[in-house]
Image (cartoon, rainbow, N blue to C red):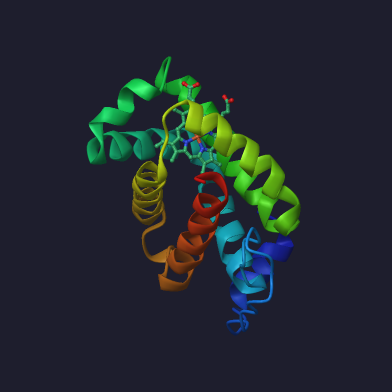
Length: 159
Ligand code: HEM
């Protein structure tokens, strides 16, 4: 974890006011929400493979019909999960600039039969996984920030 991030953990900033003038494809996250998401990602990153496996266990428990949409062994899926998670982190620094990429990714997911309800299930599974992985470090504000990020991904991808 970088020193910059550690410093920002020690001195939590006040919640920034959200401005709602951004285009609809904007992730609409405040600087503080981005910091919390990035920090929690850095905390799970060393164990991303395990976290991915926990996520898939939960996802398939919530909706067993999703299992057949994923081809190949769980290790391969874990790598795709890591790619998706890193894309989410990159999106924090790019705001609307990433929307075209996400729209293309959304189109590919639509071809796979992934619908809005699946995004909701995936979001539940991911937030559950982060809660289990980070316990108290996944506090209310961090959870809210992840939910905001996942909602905006869903809004952009699941159209
Ligand atoms: C935050 C939203 C999501 C992101 C950023 C994301 C990201 C990705 C990425 C980067 C890939 C690899 C792309 C490729 O192989 O062409 C992928 C593949 C896939 N995603 Fe997602 N995804 C998201 C949501 C979902 C949801 C909601 C589902 C279903 C519950 C889903 C199911 C799949 C499946 C089935 C594949 C193909 C796996 C395979 O090749 O076997 N994704 N996703």
